[in-house]
Image (cartoon, rainbow over all chains, first blue to last red; front, side, top):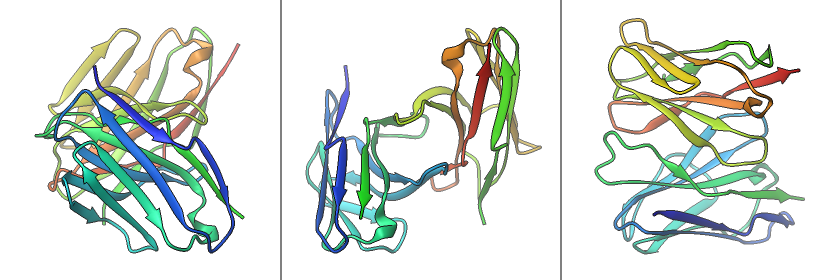
Length: 114
Length: 109
């Protein structure tokens, strides 16, 4: 069966500090991978998605970046965090082709920028 | 622009039935999803509709009308554990998911 891991679960970082969140998927090959952010009481905002190693599409302009160094590893980074980067970060995967497949979410990372 | 509308919050009684509506305006349509999200947790998949009509899964059912840009999630025999947010999402012509803000469902004994 497939499993998706995210860490850390919670993170408190000062403004201006760097960020690295990691997501790994087990039990599947060549998945589509996604990074979402969810502000309190809000819907999911797609940040990045990837259809393969080294292939990253960005949905919104921001000070975040993503990388996919391995097939089942997806990393979200920032060089300098802003207060507005606080939120609940979710990694998700879906099967390829994903025409009719739901997305499966990791447990999430709650980031507070102080 | 693309838009998904859901009520912000609903309240229902344990054992009753509740219907959560979702209307959408998107560039193309390639399926509608419902997810459940408990507070502080990740969303989990509930249902998928791509053709008009009703899909039933135990206590949960989801309905779709593509001509009206409308869906609803029907929850029967409500239990306290059903207290959660319910997210509606539509896959657009580019096969990207457009998410609603979610409906917070409060179940009272």
